[in-house]
Image (cartoon, rainbow, N blue to C red):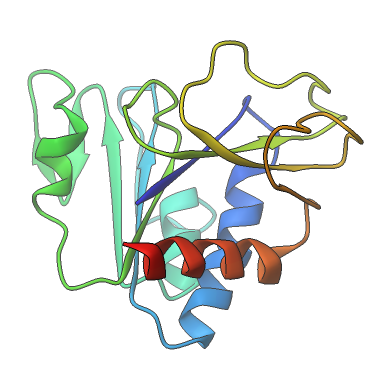
Length: 161
């Protein structure tokens, strides 16, 4: 399980859609869990991120919002990530979008058009995907459109476990 994190509009969804397609082409079963801080969001509507993940052939797609978890279950408050993940099964890899404060490994997406600065205080950064030269010299760095190398990195992580 790895979370893709970054500022709003930095390209997390665009990258993840490519990574999902790449991993699926390799025969892996993929779940995507997206986090949003917005209440009342709609799902399974053409153009929404969750629908785009489904159309990219993710095996499971979940949305976690303050007022519900989609596997269509209403909640009084946003549940812990561990509770949400308890309902995910029969996949090879779980990709999270968001969850920057969760105690999980992360790949940060940094795009110069959004902000050339990485997130301050980010814990458990494994790699950075960016178009900003030298932004994260302490970890592996990939280009924004490098779904193949990012997928290789993820597969390497699953093989290490």
